[in-house]
Amino acid sequence: DADCADEEPSYLLHERQKQQELFRIEQYVDMALQYTRLGSDTNDFVIQKIPLDEVIKLSIHKYAKQFIHKKLRLSYIPHDIMAVTDKKWLSFVIDQLLSNAVKYTKQGGVTISVVPTNADVNESKTEEEKISWYERTCHTDNESISIKIEDTGIGISAQDLPRICEKGYTGYNGHADQYSTGIGLYLCREILDKLGHKLVITSEQGNGTKAEIILFNSLS
Image (tube, rainbow, N blue to C red):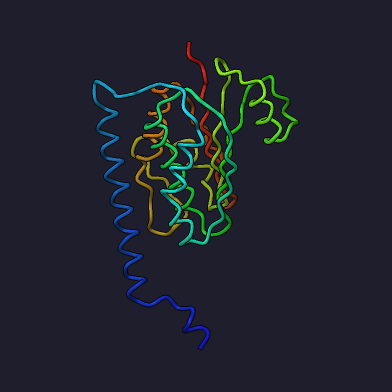
């Protein structure tokens, strides 16, 4: 029977569910640790110039199984773009944003892009043309760079959107009887503030979400 042949054996299904639960637990533990560290009097920020492609690829690899399990498309074109930031903390933020994108997307996929946001770049240019311009000019002292994570998920209601980064705010996420913790995006905003970066989230309920990390790439 063709339908039976396509069904996943129960022991494999159980194993996959167990792995997913362990992955979620690891995420919560990591979030708790970062919350504690962020609230301490000292921090371990290491500000340096890093390749953004390296950080993004690590996050993609971390969530690869989640994309495969949900049969979601992932679009990302690597580029040789550097930024001045803390690799470990930026990685945590990208992990959180990618986790949300996967969690609240049932079909379609996620697109990650890295583009310069300098005012000198003509807005009519495509993202590929902007990246080409950036790589040719290589102005690394005063450029700003945007990391965009866009999904085709359930989106965020207009009522919740202004408050999603508040500590402990549990906005309705579109699933009956399920609510967000209100800690992940709060941590993202706090971390980026400390790094001198910015988090911008735009969304429309039913039409996906775009999370944008803006890195003000200055060594001064």
